[in-house]
Image 1 (cartoon, rainbow, N blue to C red):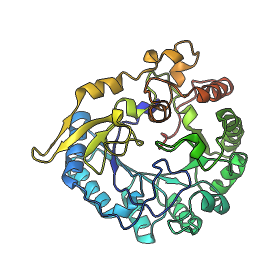
Image 2: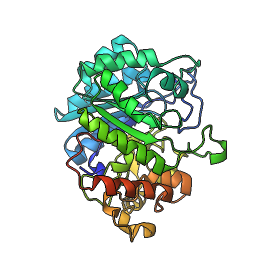
Image 3: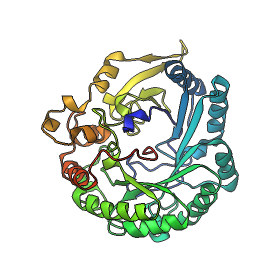
Image 4: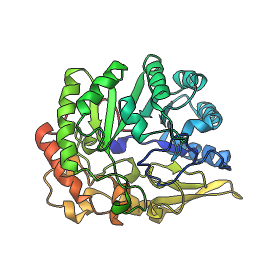
Length: 360
């Protein structure tokens, strides 16, 4: 199904992180000494608003840091959601660095888990070291092994850079050895407000990624593993809307705002995607409906550069967050991605049969 159908409410839980990833899109160093003042009432009101408008709760725990550092808040919001309705689903996107007690709780309470891991230990430890610069691979691998045997949907999200671009088949073999059946990869993209010349790694042409991805995608199919990419998230259903951000599906930030996208993680980051604010006195969220309508108007038919594209309804203009960050315009596609997506469309011939799981 087209990715906009993943209509969930996402909770940003922390700015803190226990890793120091080289390509972090936040372009910040997260320190464990930060003090955060969460307004749990804001989160609960946002969840209630979602439930009243949808009739169900699909609650996704996320962060621009590591969400399990706020495991107590996760537990409280899980219980609150269950209090509202039995029609509830929980998803967690995590870096996989947490203890066995947390791993056990996750296995008993979370329906879908996505762990960000970039591959074999030497690659993982290069791209995703701990905050102190040490290895993260051992604990991540241990948690993947445990959760694959104790949860229905455990997927791994791989960021592709120079270290793993030409080894994607080896990535499939590695995660197969850990019993992972769902994989997605994304090409490294430019962190927020960073210039390309300041980035730590040479940019990979999207077409090169697409060619290597396709080889690995076909290889994974033979092994009974689904290997997806953000480039193909709409290849199983025609759509004019690229992703859930265009709904817009709510993302509740630590500083009390509602945004449309993972990349807009506080009020002054990609502010065109901020469309709500918590009013502490009135104890409710004030929504900006003009902003909502502008975000909803980000359909491929309103993107001039896509007008003559033969696969526009299997792409729908790509990631609006990346467009806004890199091009300063919601309605411009990242043109250097177009050739890669067209290549994959020619080879895979959408519409595909329904993809088995949504991109995280």
